[in-house]
Length: 215
Image 1 (cartoon, one colour):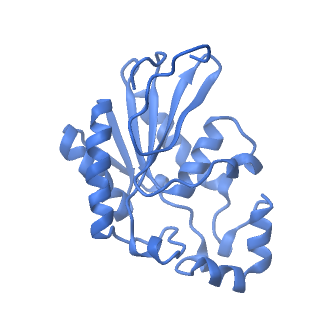
Image 2: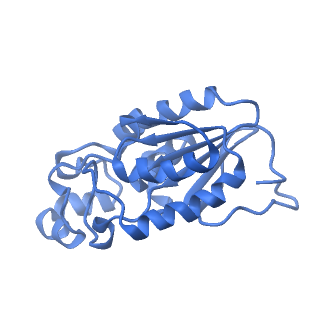
């Protein structure tokens, strides 16, 4: 990313496609592997992200994230640090169910979550609890970056949303303002004068420099 302000940068990269993604099943902490298409997505995205010359690479310890991160590690020579704290939201009884099944079996929970209320989906974690366990992992890695360094975080769509919301200082009810990440796409935070700012969201190509009055 050329033409950016100085300071650290965090690239939040979602894992590639899985069979449960194709079936619209809630994966959560269930350890589902990549499909062949998902592995191809990871290879393509890794070639692009290697162009950012990342300094550190951390990943969820679930296999779909591990294998996605491994493609970037092979291209950059970086060692991957795996963390349980970067796993997807644990959603208890929702895990393994399709979206239609969840709406049919848990209509009140589903509706409350849609309204932005704190809900233990399927008896699992609150979104704020996911942020509590994931954000410290990221900030610890940021502290180890060189000046103006880049950290790549390989994680999951729901967990990435909570990390973005927490790091940008938004109230939990506002975290859903971030649309979902497509498989193997990423979001980028950069350090601004007043803290973290969102530079890219759901990107699949390398960003262009920002030119004009809003640099």
